[in-house]
Length: 96
Image (tube, rainbow, N blue to C red):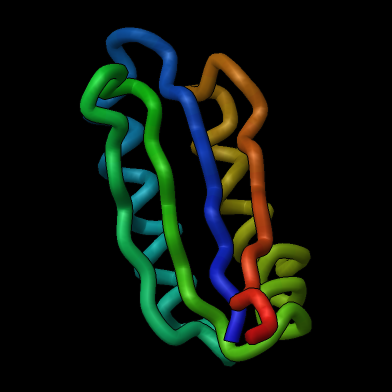
């Protein structure tokens, strides 16, 4: 299993529109093969700084979703609402 951390920063006054569209992205990810779970979080000190933490069966499952036409189309609606590029970090459990 891997975890994917996505950091986004929302432009001022677009928070409500972002919330609506980002939920749509997460709902579609849930149906993607290999998706296990996910949650959306916001930075307590900067409410426009958002994080998506999702769990996937493997990097290849995540990669398939990340490169999918469906995600690209959904992200085309989100990208204009962000004032920075999203940062994606793939995390895996450290060896014992």
